Image (cartoon, helix red, strand yellow):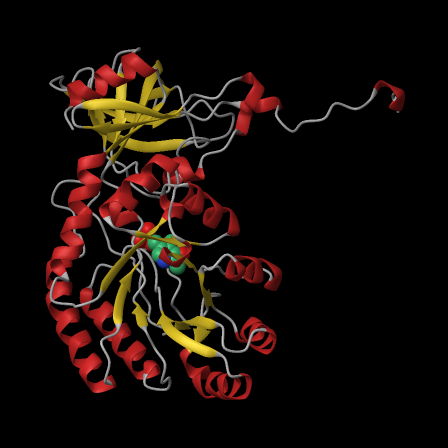
Length: 406
Ligand SMILES: *Cc1c(COP(=O)(O)O)cnc(C)c1O
């Protein structure tokens, strides 16, 4: 997408605004399927927690994607978007047995990540097809909040508990059809990925009825020019070869599953916000925008670096700015960032705003969530309206006057 298109969308739909480029999502999807084209049965399940707008789900469905979900509400959104239950995968952590039962009853493939629930589910539903999430204890991922496969992680069943796991399976007739791992986000080094994959292959040998192996996700995308990213093509070459060899050894053509979120949608997203005030202090120049961590929390939550452009003045002389929000709490998007000279009223564009941005937004400070626009074939389509005052009041119940005062 070009800056002039983004600027025009900000004028048309107002700010702050999320914009997603459909073509970029498609090209990432194609890149992944092409990298693994040597695998006979490949399945991509989009991890919808990254960006769960129904229009985005429909777009990915049309590309042939399945869905990876982590709550029953995500499952329901997926069904609403038109996914068949058997194209939806449920990979929750720490949810109740009741929720898992409800999702299984919808015909969705469940993935269980602890022995307690596995035992209880297995006793109640012998023969139900179940996938299990293994924790390979590999340190991977960009930082500790997004690393989920290490020894202290709450995710998955430890690979060291395999003997116990096998005993439960044998005593409950549970039908293990898949093995899954997901070791974290922003994995830089494909060797780490391949190493974890070997652990998964080893675990898989313990089960006779497998239909698929799910390697999760965690692909690193570039956040700025020349940034490192997961080399998907190299991973594709190496892992496909290894996977095909494993299938031969196992005696069956298994399905290889990936469940990317960030890889598919991060770079497709742009967050546009208007500069309300430029404030010179003794130590810095603040650019205060009409947004805050209520709309984009990643920089404050886990220090993510979103590249920021001034699309109103792209050729301006670069100066140093601290870009901050309007929330009554410190909410710094970027410190000492070189940005073309900013004037009040300019539109700033945050890159990599597709994944974990809108989906983590809130109404903090009683602000509205932004609108969302999908850019397809040179045209912007509104896929979520800007909120209104009614949205803030929905579900709030005033006290009846009969209660009186304290
Ligand atoms: C969040 C999540 C993903 C997606 O991770 P990305 O880094 O966005 O690709 C995949 N699988 C599971 C189980 C997840 O929780």
